Image 1: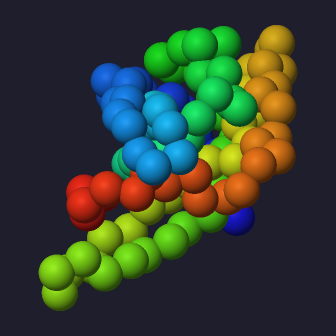
Image 2: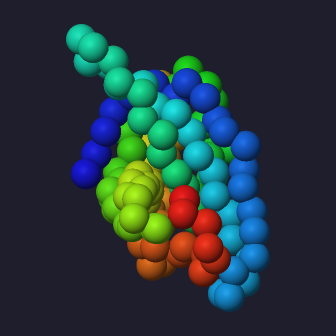
Length: 111
């Protein structure tokens, strides 16, 4: 799936240790340009997409997957980006993620 919008915030980078080694997650907030704008929190896992080339206020297009999973009777939904393309004059493009779609750490965190 794809979504277009304006990058409005970067959340702090999260890191940790799983059974497959160190993991890294960068989340950002995208605001759609609809009549009734929506805000979407999108996660980038690993180092395959360099989010440092984008800045707050940039218009971007994000290709993503949506996945829900159950933990202790509650459901959690993740929006995971696998490609981010700048829509501005420079047309910043981050390379598509070529690895597995779900590089989730194996720990007991529900998110």
